[in-house]
Image (cartoon, rainbow, N blue to C red; front, side):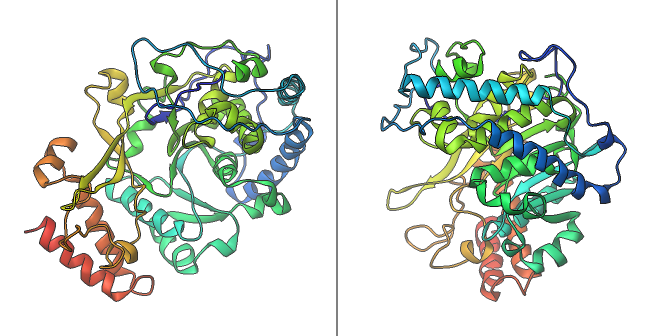
Length: 448
């Protein structure tokens, strides 16, 4: 059975080097040679062609059984040196088990015989983000934080369709930041209606123009320049019923099998094509089947486990950061605990020196979402303590913050400076009061 106990989420990197043959095929992976000689203006057409063929394989391999349902909720076990036996929380009828296994085997066979491939620009690197609607503002924060680190990597921000865009951001602001909005509907057409919310992330990865990419949730940004991650290990050197269905051996329930947090992922399409395509299959049928098989009632059920286990199913190497995600926040003067951010750690140090030495590299600002109009607002902003005074939201004070991030780096001040600058620069995007309150907040809390 797939990893059945919900540990604290940890960041995931799926590494770039494919070692050996896939479990389910004896010949070299199919290579879409045309993708290596194409001009970027040809990519939309090639992406539509890919999707047409791939969608046929997805729908032809649908499990012919009723969807999985279960009412049990898993108890959080956490990281332990002597893990318990792997329990079975999902109960499948024999018919469901046979149908799932048959459909999975059929899909793998179709992949091994396919005559299509992923289209991308050879040697390209970039950032992939999914957003749209209110999340477009969060993506703008992330893009600006990326530029603040010094990276010039191009950014593709994928939307469901053009209606989820904002011309002020997509047409005016993003081009100045080497970023662009990409509606998924231009590739998927009417098939967009069959893709669930988690599927947008997966499709964005498949049809991005980059050979190697860093995927970020719209509210997740790096604290340091991410360019180094593409040229350094682990990226350059290396996811019971679920395993029976996928025809792969059941792994031990050790520290390598903790639950994942998929807000930050790296891929190489050249070496992990099969892994990406299998992940797409797990997500396409995730809501009815695979999300429940993967999480078995754990909190946060969704796409987060599909990326690792698609790598396992395709026998592709992968690396999962061992450092546990840390929740940052504060306790109000009324005694209420407010968690604001999840810190995800540097995979380079995590691999070399271990979890004890790793430093935070990514900030996943999950509560509340980062929007200057929301945060710099006396009614909604969580920058205000219970008595109305302004304060930090990641740590209790500056000393704690700089000790945690190291080298005197005040990452939270960095973020608020960027948010204040956005509120003041983009006068047609935010209310004037956001600029005023943001400026006062920086002066009173971080510059006093």
